[in-house]
Amino acid sequence: AVTPVQQLSVLRVSRIFQICHLVDLLRVTPFFGHLWVFMVSFRRSLAAICWIAFLMTTMIYCMALVLLSAVTGVCLSETDGSEQIGTEASLLCTQFGSLRSSMMTLFQAVFGGMLWGEVLDALSVIGEFYQVLLVAFIVTM
View 1 (cartoon, helix red, strand yellow):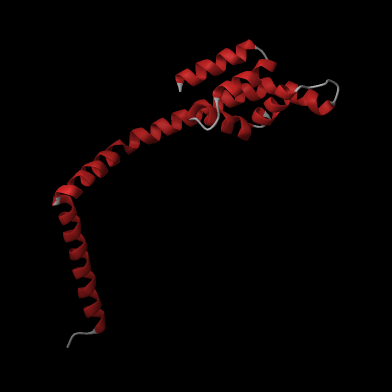
View 2 (cartoon, rainbow, N blue to C red):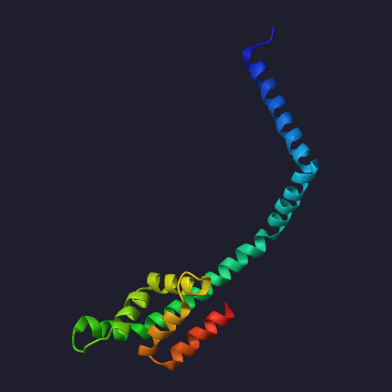
């Protein structure tokens, strides 16, 4: 007599064979053959994709730190109330007032979520050097 545990083991093994057969069938079928090639090439390029993501995040982080340190004086004088700050300086403090917002602004400027010309105009408050630095950063990315 077959016990329920043995019957369950046989069912598991047959299910594994069915899944393997389905994977083989998908690989051999012409339409899914192209999908198979895509999946294999994606898997092989995954390490390069991870390195690129790491390098881009590191570059955005470093640039955000540079711009944050440059903008801090403008933002502090805005909260002091000692000077009358214009709308560009207010926009600058909104875009680069914290590390998170600086990184998000740079990410959006690089990948099209925000027009980088607007960010460039806002940087005119702190000087042309930072505008040139932003253009070099955008071109590099």
